[in-house]
Image 1 (cartoon, one colour):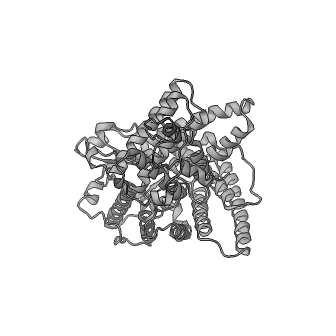
Image 2 (cartoon, one colour):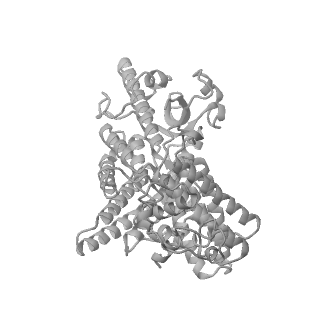
Image 3 (spheres, rainbow, N blue to C red):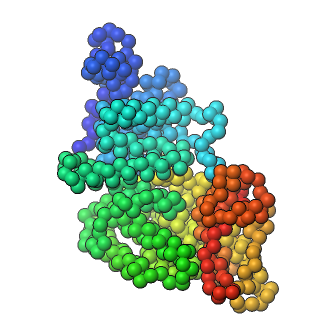
Length: 566
């Protein structure tokens, strides 16, 4: 049921609530219920005197009163931010369910207005490893308000939990909102911790559903609204963080898609396939690393074949859906954008499934046309959400082009396509899911530069020795001497021929960034770090790559690190 105008009006009174005015006592104007009414058990209602359109166009500095800034922030959220945060397919949750819940839950109200303030005035934090600002004095009024409201919301939730009065669904909704707030601040670690807590709560609620202890209406809310949000967020976060999304996936092992009734149903299906494909690829990589085998077990090959069949079925059903939509007239910009986005996911999943069972990185070069499609469709998807000033909205919680473009930046070794993908990543919403993109773009630039400079060194070494033996590049190449002192600008291709793309040994899989002072990852040896004679606060890129071993005449996966400057 859509939110009625009266809901918005009831949250935007100019002064105190009707109850306090009738009693002729001072009202604190807290929303949605003032403290005075709450403490005395009275019903709290507000009158409508100012329209939301007026409120969110006025500068917050015009209203030093906190209550005014709260009402303005809610108006801005409802009329502007919500549609971008949730995307075109998930208005029910962000524009209906959340505003309705906030009427009776102050914690949800506070979380909404915190998101609104951060959305309207996002703060860039360029430090890759620790993205929180170190000097509170640099914060804007919007950000200070957002942090105050967020703190108030967290305190309210904690108090409800301590009293045993926390509704589990309100807790889940609050969890989603808190993830958004942490993401907007660049606090990826905290956002992922909240995600894990949400997954645990979902699993506990599913146990109640299985036992029949949960009403059907709440079971529907859980499986049809809340769980899909966590699955989509997990699909975005899995590649970089290994988010625990697998436990949320439905049992649809051999179910093939027959048809889609909407773009939303097509979206939900391709997100599941994307998640399953990423999980399979992760398992295959782990098997190769642990066993040094050149082939994966038959079980994984069969799994790959099943997922490939499901993807082909998705493609047929999606093609039929698009033909049906076109037969009804021209697509809206939103429909065109969504369709383009789903194509990028299809191409990404297709490439993953075609290459995941092979340990060779070079195999992926056969799919350059698919990478080109990802770039072209991503551009279409972004165009529909371009704002009047030519920029993208600062944040989206739903799937966007970030994952397919990032996949292209890392996996496509054709210089031109790779750089087009980087340019699109710069255009995209600056916060997607749990990640801030500016440091991700910088990270991608560094990875490309390392691969290409290392690849050039390998090619030069091979030319000097005039050897065709893979083992001729076994000697350690000094990444640092090739990467430092050179420009990090990768806006144009290097001189390396694109006919001979990045050599196998130079192709790295970035895993993350660490600082020695904060701990060395288990697979990285202390001597691997010590040999660089770097400061303890130096950023290190941790990665894996295939390395040829002459003694055994085999390729092995090795984990290495290299200093990197952001």
